Length: 129
Image 1 (cartoon, rainbow, N blue to C red):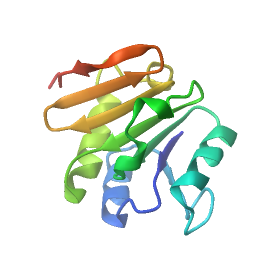
Image 2: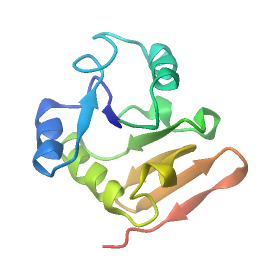
Image 3: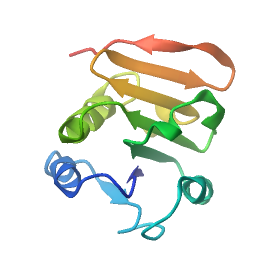
C-alpha cells in the first residue's frame, strides 16, 4: 500500500492517480484528520507492507527503520512530490514493496539516500533515468 501523509497536496495526489499509482491518504482513507507525527507511526505498525510518502523531515532518520514499512521523505518542492514519488516507485532498486520495506528513504533531485537499521552510513543511489 502507498500511503500519503495528511499534508500531501490534493493536486499531487490526483497526479499520482493519473499516473496509475494506487494511493491512500491519512485523513481521507486511513486514520483521521489532525493526526500528529507520533500518531502516524502506530498507524503504520497496524497496516501491512506500507510505503509512507511525506514532505515532513521528521520522518527522515535511520532510527525510524522498521521491517513492516518504508518511510519516504520527499525532499523536493511541493509541486514536484507526485513526480518524485512515481520516479521512486519505478526505480529498479525500489519497484516492489519488498525492496522498500525496512528502509527510510530521502528522495531528492540528486538521488536517493537509503537508511537501513544495520547499515551506516546511508547508501546513496543515483536516478536511473
